Image (cartoon, rainbow, N blue to C red; front, side, top):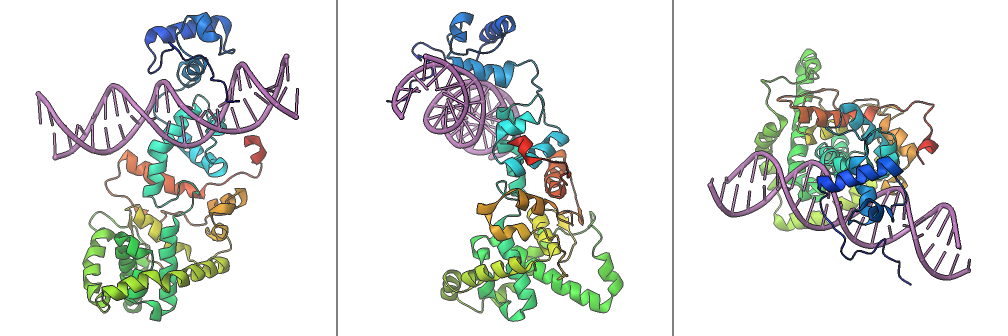
Length: 346
DNA sequence: AAACGCCGCAACCGCCGAGGT
DNA sequence: AACCTCGGCGGTTGCGGCGTT
């Protein structure tokens, strides 16, 4: 037996509510209170189904609803809660007085989600996107093993799928190389490289283009057949194994991925990737488990990144949107108090 | 000024679980 | 146990506003 419709839809109005309908609904609920939504429309003189009335009331007419732009604090709370709860909008809304689940859901889908994506962060897992991580793994490997630093290997990875990543890889390698040279000639200058770029500095993206052009001859050492082969065999599977190993051994330097994430956010970043001894609380431990096992532990692990993702970045032409965008990245270092109890949310 | 495309948001839809009969 | 009602939830849609061409 099929499920009965929530109400008889014949002759019932749909679509946007008129002020008159709103007034009828408000007046009725003020007198009788919410509840018994099935009979409410008839009693209130509305040609709507009960469900529509309930949604209109809970999402729009309720007197305690706060309207207007979300504050930074609210946005921070949403992101934090979403990292723990996922798409449990009602549970998130319960922690944001005056905000409805529908409003939070809309805000997430139209603002926060896009901003996280632009920042190179997976809005589902709240971790740096895997495609960028794969690239970072590749770069990490090539830095340790110069024999891997060949165009086919680079092209064989995700870079082929995203030319922007290839340019990024080229730039980072170039900058690393240059940085090493600077370090050799002038240690003091090397220290200066960690100072955030200022307005007279060239954005990395333009440096990329210049330096990528210089690297084209290297890439031209193989033809398109090799290119295709590189894309379907060896490197990709090798990379997967390598990625797994590096994750297990916790070898990814946070400074490298920091740079990648920052770059993907089109920030201007002077943090040259260096191979450093990983800290115990590497922010990528949790990724061993992949998305399937994403849970509270991994959230806690991911969120305990010792290094702010944008710690060495400067922002140019920063608009309020830009500030929020960078703010999103910085949210990954928030701390959850020990007294926090996940069961409160469930 | 008109056409077009994009974006944000209110509203709808379908499904689910709880509770009652 | 089976069926039904109801409230609630998350995903999706469609419309209106706005910016761009």
